[in-house]
Amino acid sequence: DMAVLEGSYTPDPGDGMVAFDAATGRELKEFSGPLEGAVSAGILYAAAAGKLGAYRLRPLADGVPPAAYTVWEAPCPRAYAVVVAGESVVCAGEASIRALNTATGAVLWEARPDADIRGLAVADGRLYASATDGRILCYGRDAVAPTLPITPPAPQNSPPAALVERVRSVLQS
Image (cartoon, rainbow, N blue to C red):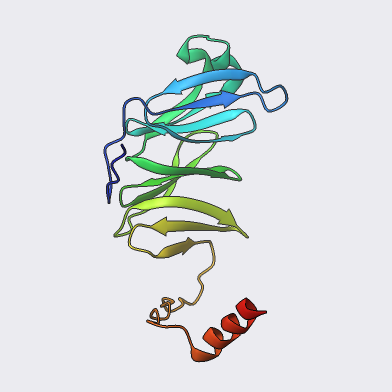
């Protein structure tokens, strides 16, 4: 049996992530706990327990002490998404989006949307954030004219007569 719940949930302590060597498929490291992460240039950017950190993957996989693989750690509210774009790593979650410098962890900018952010994407120099209220937010250096929300058409109770007739003729042949 499985329960399906609507809305947010508290992350399960049994959640986790596994890093593999892309060339060999060998497991490098298993990370326990609720994590969101992204990898770029051999650095794992992982968000968990109220912080976002940058960790060197090879030394981390070799089991050395944390000081040997930790590049930096910085506060980050509960994260649901992490993405790396150029020299920025972005974590987003509970009504927050925060961009940090990949080398130092310094905060570059922050936004406080009025909804939780569950997904991030980067394209053409812009950051797109998927909000729990159904909006897609767009951030970039240059201002753009806002567009009106797209409202899907109301569902029809019955298909158009021409469609019904076409389906009937296909089924009869």
